[in-house]
Image (cartoon, rainbow, N blue to C red; front, side, top):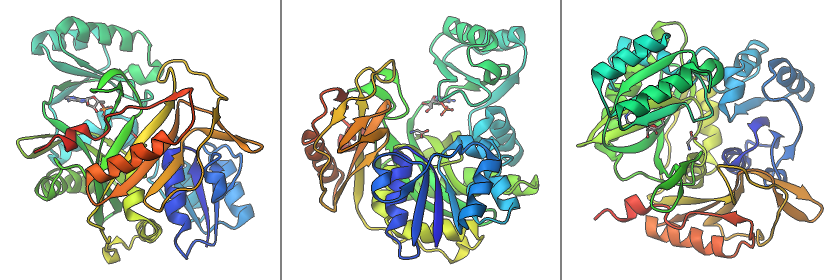
Length: 421
Ligand code: AMP
Ligand code: GLY
């Protein structure tokens, strides 16, 4: 079959790597892709957020299956347009993608379905929001309603910080995303991510992961898109996962069906776990980046069968075969990230890998025989192992052979899980 994959980050390189190993994949095209993806797929320039352009391309190329990586095309209605035009598509409708694109929508769904999450209130007026903060006290969590490039959440440790966050959001720092604000109870605990495929009715867990959001060792420094991840997440054990399924995921999906907007695609539930009890922090309607890289490393080629079954509404037939192993990924970023950074530096030492290691490209570009950095997060050095420590050692050994003076990475990915007795 001829498959079109939308996106061009490390997540999509990992998806492309897994999909292209499945014998059902005859041809893989990725838009826009990157230099790493170009080694295993045809890359093309296409505006992946323009539904008409994507449909026209899929028609012209007679694409059999479209996989959508990032949230922006989903929010733009690309999956709706593709399905309407008759293309088998993996990824939720724009209506169902509101589980990521609107925090208030998610809270409403949780309230209507009884899904376990933090108590909340929703505001469209600054003064009312401030009164609420003063009444509740700190710690308290302030969230801009819409997509804000991962920056629309302030976990305020005192009331002044919360009030300042409200001033910023209503003052337009996040554009339209800040015109509505959700204020939430602060939840204490350990965070982990749960990934599931849903075909509208059936749901199949496909793995757990934890990431490191801060730029520097010891979980210090500014927030980023994620500096590394590992799978499985020890804190999200089978018992916690089953609870999350029954008290959060299934109620949510049932409510989506009840509203006439069934959810089809991968659901990424960010959970806060305390004393073995999970509560929802947020949903994302796509694979995490870099969480996808560790999931793909563990799942491999069977992922294509699972994504197809999901898109065709026959997840009931799917059995995921789990290797009893661990995967860990180290993000290499351009110095300065998540602030200003330079593009165009040379990266050497990307040669062949052993089968237990993959260097996924997140932001690269080819220039003749050279690979150049072309983004903030640039490489995801990903390894498998019988234990997490083995995966970690293998990943860092590979990192040490990459020659890129303008890049950096954290040296302690996995510490939380590795420190557990
Ligand atoms: P979100 O974009 O909703 O995932 O929020 C970003 C981060 O803020 C999460 O990964 C959590 O670390 C933190 N966070 C969000 N909501 C809460 C909450 N209610 N209690 C504690 N931490 C939270
Ligand atoms: N790594 C976090 C995310 O993809 O949202």
